[in-house]
Length: 275
Image 1 (cartoon, rainbow, N blue to C red):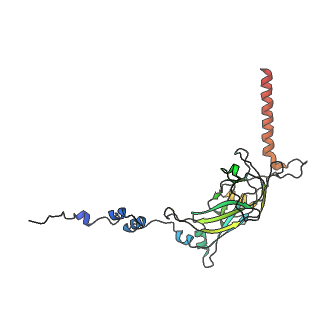
Image 2 (cartoon, rainbow, N blue to C red):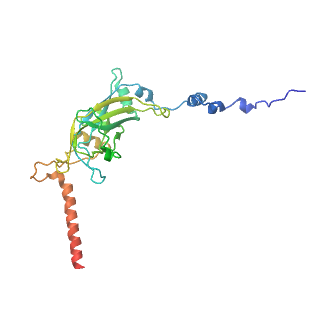
Image 3 (cartoon, rainbow, N blue to C red):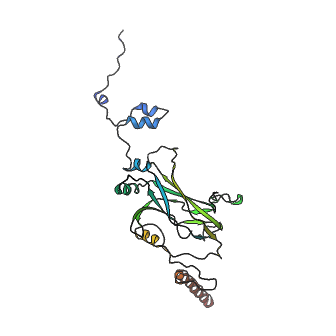
């Protein structure tokens, strides 16, 4: 009895495309991601500076410190931001890197800075609220910032992280803690990324509405970044000189809004009398 004949591999199968994945890579239970990637000869595309960026040493410097804020309570309508908006700069600490290398590294798009709120002495994380308000957080707004590469007020290039949308719910004296993370875009799910650098701000005060001294005028750094396309607001400033003194010209926008509202109420009253 003749042994069974198995079909011969066709010419197409013998000359399989080099980029085609083997079925065994799909059936592997452990390290499947590694086997899949090595079975294909097509390399994973990474950002040109990915490896260099994740292997560099970083420092973050606060270029603009928070000074004051008006507490916004537990609503969402009357929210006021921390003033002035904190601005940080990422610095590459590599004495052997050239100016061109530094310019490339600060343009790595996967660096992010996260912000949390801490006690005045910087020893306690104050993000959590008391038990009755445990579903809310003390610091609200956009607590993560992406990099913006531009020139500062001295026309020096840098990588900046701006936080123009931070608010605090309760009055008190606090600090902001910033943590830099340099992400790997090809890292697998569940992989942890260590902190590249951290820094703590100076203490700032959060006032009740009646005690808030007012907003400061925007700094030269804020204006310069805004000119280059950074998403940050410019303020004229309306600090109170004294409790009995009228606000300066920086409050013109609020005055205009109040006059418009008053005239609107007057027109509505006239229409009611005519009716």
